[in-house]
Image 1 (cartoon, rainbow, N blue to C red):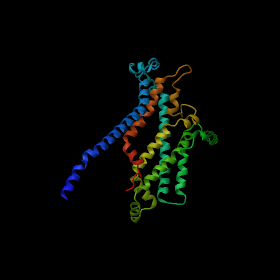
Image 2 (cartoon, rainbow, N blue to C red):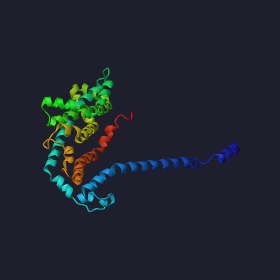
Image 3 (cartoon, rainbow, N blue to C red):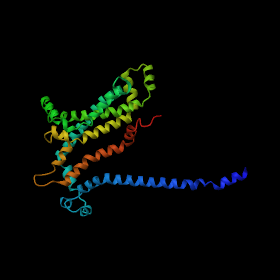
Image 4 (tube, rainbow, N blue to C red):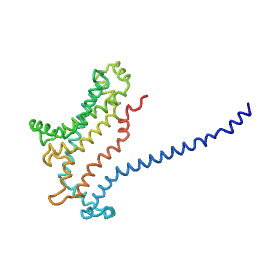
Length: 298
């Protein structure tokens, strides 16, 4: 018995030797994944870095070859023209008003609707949620003419509501979907405890559910704000002059009949993008937790 055991121990390969090929394969896969992530990062960030370089160059340097532009002297002339333009600063204020109004309305309506979808099950609720989500994927250009005629009849053309209403229509389904998934993850026992203490349905929603859903609320609010902030189609169609234009509409206006100020356009694009980047960086943990809610079941 001892002899057979001794032979088996001699013929069996050491565990470290058998695991070595598997470990090398895993390391190769990990390095391939890292290289892919690095490539995606470079592809994603390169256009933004190039726009930044254009905003820090003179008009003459922008027309040069790429390598010559890359090593051209740095200047802030384009930024001075953009930040010194009162019209552009006014359009930034318009963008803030429109995006903030859209976000607030979507959060109020979306949170109530999402709570209803998450807690009050009724026949066809899942179908209704999917159909509502399909609205956000509908081509926006297909509704331009009907909306234009409707807004003319309402007398709101060239006013903030003409840009706010379409943004609400196309952002609200995503807001409701994100919040519905998040509300469903909150235990029912917390609501039951609040009802036992005498809280009404509305008090339970405002004092129990909303505080627990802060990560989801932040995620939905940021997604809605970014979508409205970057809108160009509705603002360019329903707003006619610089008094109501958003910044995305004003940026292409840094041009004349015979020339285009590419440096000012690049600086304007960065001035619109940088605030969004900062907001996402500050709340990135909340965004990730809000988007991944419901992905793992306990």
